[in-house]
Image (cartoon, rainbow, N blue to C red; front, side, top):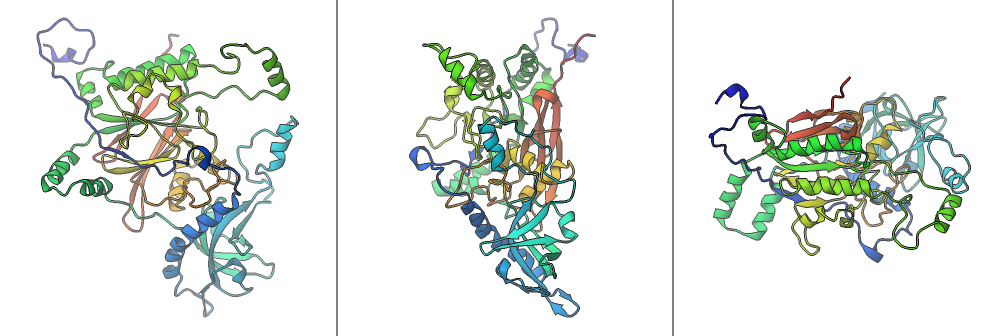
Length: 502
């Protein structure tokens, strides 16, 4: 057979025997860090103020552990810096350092009056791209349970800060009552687990058999690739189908030659990071809702209020892929899930075909189709992965100057908080016992969905941590899919595009 034609789709019949390709399996061990209580146990009557105290209580020891040795011998004009426990213990003219929660006083941030104006249908201002005041009226505060202190100084302009992050600042209070910052510290990256650490610890709990350990180690040597995608934006329009069909045929190995099929067979899992459904129609006014109720059908549903086509097409897309590849689905801002973070899994009733591959209700093992929370974390092939649908980064973007999304993603890890601006400007659940947004362990891979373009880098921590950061573009706009190699954590980009005839 002519080797030059080996990768072409249209060939004459041949007697050559082709091997049956099998997709590489993957070890999948999700965590349930962001799941909320169900039923009556989930309450929204409590106050949000407790979240800041919980976050400060958790992260204050971490940032003090970094600041104390760094500033231990620091002196200015013979005066040695000292540590104070509370913000109100700061004394004018005295060199000291203190830890607390950052609060950004920004006049352009949204407030409750905007929500009231929407209720009464007064023309509300359009959403702002940035909260930064052009006239310099923004102020940075440091607060704890005792009070609040206004911060000034050059380090505040060098370091990225947003409401809700925990920092330690060193400096002195001036005659105006402002705290002039000389230096500041953040909690930085937490401890990073070793690869396979959690899987092996679970295996040790199940069995102490030495043969089982050896077999597990041999399985660990096999590594494949993880396909990560975001922003499918299924709307049900005819224009959506072609790109999705190309993606589907690629993942199934139907639209490529033998060499590419061998590479596709290494893709062991697909992760969809939010915004699988396109934006819905805007909310209708009270008068429109009243008219709709009068004209509503007695039986069936009102097609003007709900369009089932996007969800049905997404279900068909998932159900076609699932016999061949396992899928992890995160909800996003435009998906049919709760708006407040952490978003809970999309209800399986939305996927009448794909849900057949889900785990049973009482099963402790994940299913072939795993609808998860946003944010989400879990172990795949021994690596700890953490990701979200993009809302925390989009909100941080409004607080800071510049457009560097990778820097924002990095700071989320160094602040040890998945959603620092919640609940100030990002809707979230009012936690009472524990702030689930606090990052307990450093991931090996941190991906963020629905970003303007694809970007990636590797950051390192002081204790040897190494994290691959990935900003995922919107597939509907770019046609791009990210492939993560589970052996090296290197990434590659696959692009699908439709060329129209001139």
